[in-house]
Structures are given as C-alpha cells and as structure tokens.
Image (cartoon, rainbow, N blue to C red; front, side, top):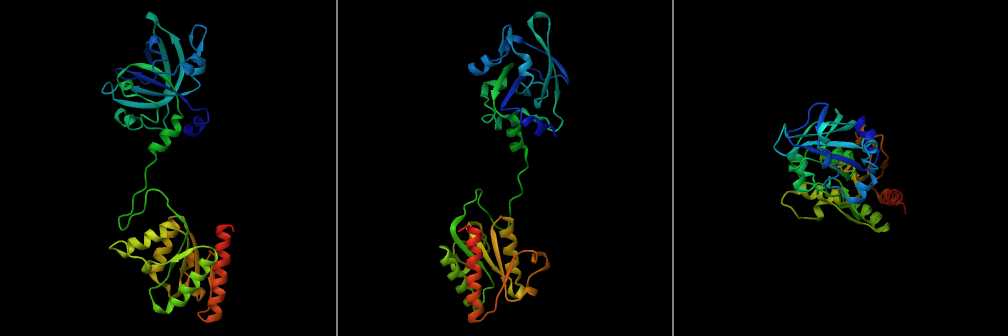
Length: 291
C-alpha cells in the first residue's frame, strides 16, 4: 500500500496550494511562490545553486490543495513526478494522486491544520511550502473511522485502570459470599482491593456501575458457576476492554465452549476448596502482575 511505503520516507511533505484547483496530472505554477510559509532552515536545506532543489523536493509526498472555496474545493495527497521550466518564469508540475487516500474537502483539512503545521491564511494563498510533518501518519489517524460508542452504557475516552483494583463478577446470591471472601483475601495478598458491583452505588443504573468497575480494574475474577448470563455478559465486556480475566468455576461444564480454551480454575465450595481457590487466584494474579 502506498500509504505504508511513503510513511517511512521521512516527516517532510510539500504543501502546494493553487487558486482555481489542480488539473488531473499537470499544472502551471508560479516559481516565486516556492518556500512561502516555510521555516528558513528547511528552505535552506532544500535550495541548490540556482534555486529550489526540485530533485530533493520530489522525494517527499505532497498535499495538493485548492485555495479554500475555489476549484473543486478538494485536497489530494500524491507525489510530484517532474518539474520543468515554463515561459514567463513559471514552472510546470507533473504529479500523480495517491488512489489509496480519497480526496478530502478543504474545510476538513482545516480541522487538522494544526497537525499539518498550516496557518489559516495559507488556505487562501497560492504557494508551495515545505512542512516538517509526517502527512501519512496524520491522514492515517484522521481518516481511520472511529468505532461506534456503546449506547447501553458508557466507557471513558481514555483508559484509566487502577493498578490496585480487582473486581469480582458472580451471581448476586448469598451462597457465593464465601467465594467472594476468598477472592478478597487473594487480592489482599497481592496488594489489591477487591470489589463487586453491589459494593458500590454511583449511578442510577446498576449496569453502568458494573461497566465502570470493569473499566478501572486491573484484574477481573469471574465465577462461571451456574452459567449465570449476567456474568458471561460482564466477561464479554471485560474481554472487549482488554482486561485480564481469571475464570473460576465449581465445574468445567459451567464454562461455555467458546471460553474453554482459556485458563479456568475449578474449585470446591467447602473450606478446603476455598482455601485452594484463594491460593490459585493469588498465584495467577502474581503472574499477571509480574510480581
């Protein structure tokens, strides 16, 4: 892909703005406008004995842009392939547009102008500038579609994991209290605080509290016993958020086929079994925490 190939060529790009827009492959350009709005040291590094070093400039990608509101009001990324003299002191530019990057409206370029080192007045002035920016990296980031956001609950824009937070996902049933206490002891043994959703009450919707707890947890312990659908839903959220999940169960038959390829800790719900569960969670947590 041309995008990936050119990204390695350096961080410099040609910004070539033309009043009236660009012809498909060849246009005349005013020579005196070259290196306008270009830092002096960059211009000096690309100047030869008789003016701009076009051989060097042609090594870089180019952003071909119409002056705002003129021509087709589009911008295209491509490559200058040839520069030749024209009558009246102008030059003829020959070029190709990168078909892997779609033409974009000039106003859209305005939304990333800062990243492209473009000032506002450059949108309304025919000129050729050289910018110390990796244009392919900027376009790749800006043109990558953002995933749809959840509508049932919300997650923070940035990851905010609490390194000392462990959460337990299990049915809200008094019979699981000894199991929860074993998980709490295991967490404490590695310096972590353990909570489950019914320990907290922040939002009006319990689902949001659960998701928020998962989102900030370094490790999640999920009990698959009884095939509780809420627990499996929460495991799916944890996996989607990239959290470390320790699966536990009283019998492997409670674990869905799709999860059996993962490490699962089985336990007995008696005193001896819960002690063994505590040690197993502690050891697995130490591995995940690299301690």
